[in-house]
Length: 402
Image (cartoon, rainbow, N blue to C red; front, side, top):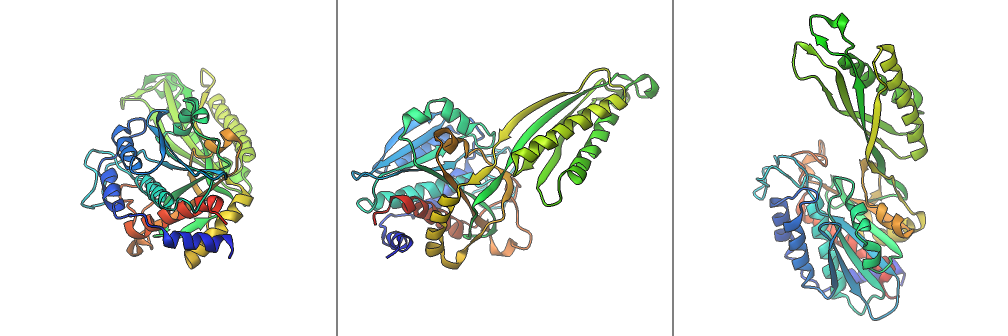
């Protein structure tokens, strides 16, 4: 019997009660909390974990939680992470458990937490059939790209056993319950860049007395896309989006400064460095062309690493998924969204694997809502089932006894 078959049989034989998951998920969805403010959410997760035979470490980097499941038998240590913060999005899903507080679980983190708790229940029920240590890590503040870093800064490495491999998953558009995997890049790297442009203010009726920073900013917006269109090779991926443009506050005054805030996405960090050099060149040239009285300034923040799956780990977990999910697992196209998960395995220098799970109701597949939209809501039953099974199966790929 091969390992994937044994894991498939283990999952079929577990005795965990998972009937609580829908109510738990709907409760988290109804009460979303923004990054660094997830106190209620963390307390709900802790209360559920208290039902299992595990050690809890709480308050890591804010509201982070680690649940440590130990076997008396020696074996590897596997960490699986779920995030649980929400977004400042006004919900427009129309479900009867919709949030009414102006925030929303528009990225699916409520599902991630529910599924990892379900995987905990399954693994807890299979004691004696696995060896080693399983760590369920619940991370706050993924949306601000600093949750993982804060947990590490708060001593995470010294608070839990060192993992041999780290795992995580994310729900995405696609047929609900479909497991999507890839070796290599699966989530993009990202940066945010704030650019400040100096001008000279004047009355709007006297533009010749001004140096108009709004015009400079507008020219930069156009030229940034020329970098992507003319300096990035056609077969490579890079996105520059201008998310904010601030300039002036009165219609008859040409302002003395403007600010652009950019967001970038990429799979190749070396390409990003080349694009950033071009970006500086273009911005500085546009400012010089308009006689800006000062050099532009550049502030880089909210950096996210490329999530780049370890090939050997990908092979091991995909073999399990192929058996457990049969024809409901596919090769994933890398997502252009970004994550901070990889900071965790990087801190220990261990391999990791990150996969996606489809969540779109069948009737919406032709035009699926995407993460961060106000109408993004997963089809609960297939999405939760596959996410829970995938989490447990991936962990057992390394811990199941032969």
